[in-house]
Length: 291
Image: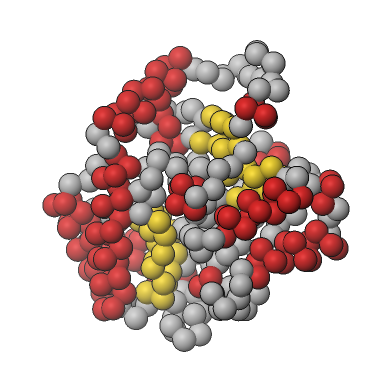
């Protein structure tokens, strides 16, 4: 738990009051192209955020020989559903291969069809060394898992890793059924079609509501970032709170996210029917009009 708290970049509420944290963990800038941390523009930047890791961090902050792994989300969840450029993870994979690091991908929010593929990392054509999963794995029951390469997982002696509550038989049984249904009902493929439709509708809302500065994500894992001014991109967290409150009063549940609390996440059920999707989008439209 303490290591997980160290790894997250979301200070409030996960880290407040618990410092200092585990040493040897370094945060690198993510490919947040709407608000580039390096103040550049994609694609002219040449993925400077990856270059920053190689040319700055590995030169001045940590010896490459002391790095065990790079850990990243294929789409940042709490960060505001930030999907990096298509070649981003290929470059991270290159770094790992060149310097001998492992690539660990966090698929806890993105896995099991949420982005229109079974795993979000598939969008980038990269194979990680380790992958974490949870949430949709057991459809609401508490279960998490880690999978990895034979090189890594084969080195673990049977029975040497575990805990009191690991491998709960009910949760494991449900997970097997979830996987069976996902395959039988072609849920990832259905999610991909849902993502196309949901993005189209969000972009239509963006055309009508100046407060929506950005629409982004992968598949139906989408978010809109609210701003006071599209040119300055000044975050508008108060507007996000108002929209969420208004939508809730009309029967639609939404979640905030992002560094400034100005992003509204949309992650509908992957089995949602068109009529219910229409209703939800109409409520969202009305909530935006209330600003």
